[in-house]
Amino acid sequence: MLGDLISQASAQSIAKVQKKAAKSQVMDASRTVKAVPGTPDGVLLMQAHALFGKLPATMPGSEKDTPAMIALGKKLYFEKAISINKTQACNSCHPIGNNGAGTDHLKTGKGALGKSSDRNDPSTMNAGFQIAQFWDGRTATLEEQAQGPPLNPIEMGMPDGKSIAVRLKGIIPYPVEFKKAFPGEKDPVTFDNFAKAVAAFERTLITRGRFDRFMDGDKQALTAQEIEGMRSFINVGCVKCHSGPNLGGMTFQKIGVFHEYTKELGRFEFTKLESDKYVFKVPMLRNVTLTAPYFHNGEVGNLAEAVDLMGYLQLNNQLKDEEINNILRFMTTLADAERTTAPPKEEKASSDAWVTPLITDIPQGVYFSPKVYQCFTPKVYHF
Image (cartoon, rainbow, N blue to C red; front, side):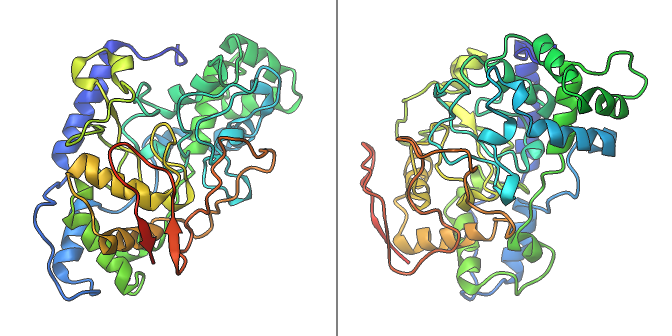
């Protein structure tokens, strides 16, 4: 069944695809890109195209999607009847209504019954471009992912897929709309078809920003500081993990390459492979300025702090303030201008809500986070 956790064989299959994808990407970030500051010279453009490439117009698998499937999937994405007490929809934790960026800005997800999970809710925007779903990559497809939360006792809490199908059959529009989306099936209102429809809709959630205009040849799309930010992003080594059109989402990496980070076992809990201890899927950076807090457990609410911490843990590099500032400027170009940081209206303030201002346009003055980590000392960032 699609809703079951994929087997060890599937995990190995994902690993093979991930390894092949990693080999196919150009990862030569050790080559320093030198040019006149603020100018998109030929070397930088060439490296950008090699390291990132252009975002495809459609997601893998979309060729099988029909308008009827997509329309049904959109309704199901906002349908709260798929949760045990009819209070939560996919959109509750991954809000896209009101131009949301696909995440709720909570440290970790909250379920229908008020329980908190141990994972930060990732954005559903561009998710279908990734090698796998969830932070540990335990499902290979959007269809499998869509069946996870409804049956998770901490999240939506439904007992099984059949119970969800029974509920949907009792809601007047759905029997007719499932027939349109899955013609020829005797009993189309099934949990598997629910997942197929939601996945079809999610494959339409593609965002683009000024970065894409730049990659398409518009040299005026980025400011001088944003271009320097791209140069820093490449030169300091961020691209070793955050490459490809989504700037991530295509590999699994250990957190703490140079300095220990052993708070959670990561992918090991799924695969049971010793080599997967402390390994997580590399998050994609599209809309990263709109999707705080950061990391698998949502422990970092300040993007500048997240960049600094990754430089220390993954690259053994105490980044300079100027490098961080420029990289943050570059990251703003990855955001879809039509998306916002607004959380869903039904969410109320709570102790684990993300409360620091989100970076939509970096303000002048001081951006400060008081949180102290054992492995590094936070800075005061000047913009």
